[in-house]
Amino acid sequence: MNKGKHQSQAEDNIYEDDYITEPTEPSVRIETHGIQEKFLSKYFNPGEKFMAQKTLLFVLVILFILVFIFLIILTSLVSIYYSVITSQLKQSDEAKAELVSQMRIINQTFEQTCRRCPSGWRMVNSFCYYFSTTPQTWEEAKTSCANANSSLLTVEDEAEMVRCSFHLESSDVNYWFEAVLDRHVSYNSRRK
Image (cartoon, rainbow, N blue to C red):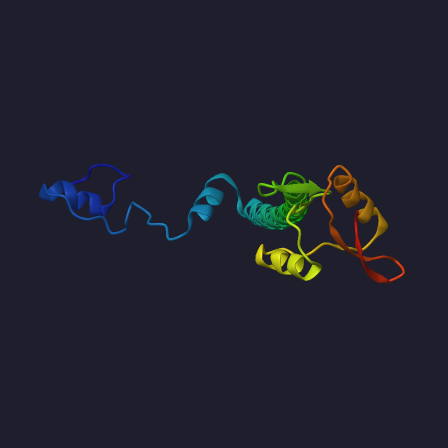
């Protein structure tokens, strides 16, 4: 059967036997190339493919370098931030220690200035003094003070002697004093 000039013999077989045979060459081409090559082969000729590949490689290298630089900058910023925070914490700890020290000093001063003396005792220059009206010898007065968890007054400078004697002038009672003055002379005197 002659169907025309352009038909091949394989096509003749298809029409003669009324069934379809497989073509001898596959009409669908299976490509094993990557996506990049498909894209390049579809839109560029071989010379342009090479240039596009070089350009793509160059862009990827530039992007990699930029990411690397970004990571270096980010690491530097984190390091600087850490240093600043550490420095601020150190300053804060030092300021806190200074405040705690000042609070201790203030509390000690407060305790000394606002300390209340027991009943019958007098506050003289942040210290409590007990001026007994009971007549006693010096030894008895010393023992009495020790029993009261205190000590008999030892005057170490003239200013303290003046402060204490000021409180005694209004009294008609005799008191024992032991004075250790700048000359390191000890003496017992009895105020009359």
